Image (cartoon, rainbow, N blue to C red; front, side, top):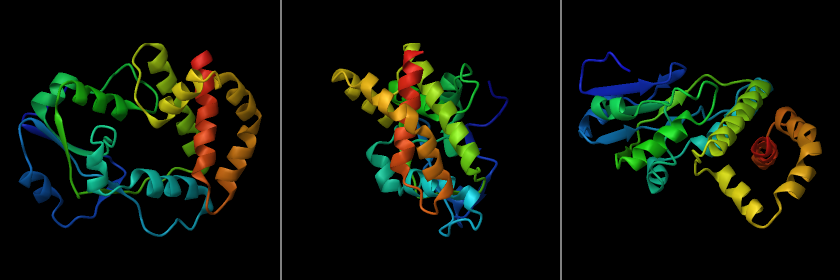
Length: 220
């Protein structure tokens, strides 16, 4: 429910900064009554001096910061809720799922609903700078919550088409889910150490860490 009175709604994360000189004008130039505009997300080019924040920075630079042309290839999958403009009538017909009360995949689910309703997403070169880096351990905790949310949605017959769920279903198809879960579970402490104590954490370890949690959550 929204009390906004005008035809369009602009969503900006509170821990973001405007870096584009014509941020509002760029959105205004592309307004359409049946189209969502997504501007993207960017991170500072230099890593934080405090190593406790390196994991989030590396993840943001490698996974979340994408140019608008790359995002447009899979417009719904690339949508994030940090920086978008949407016609108020469309938002009123979808809104965010209030059943998701913990961190993770609210924007994935929102993007899926946009696709179902045939709402066009136009990706623009209009990013906001993400300033609110989480510490390594907090980032991992939020990652775990997101994985648990994803598993709960799958168990409740609301599957989301994510990279993690695709890998899980491929393993399940070949009967490898249980053995892979068995192998990964005791390695979690190793993954955490590699992700939190290195200047250049390997995000493949993060992928394996998430897969381990997802396998267990899907069996819960």
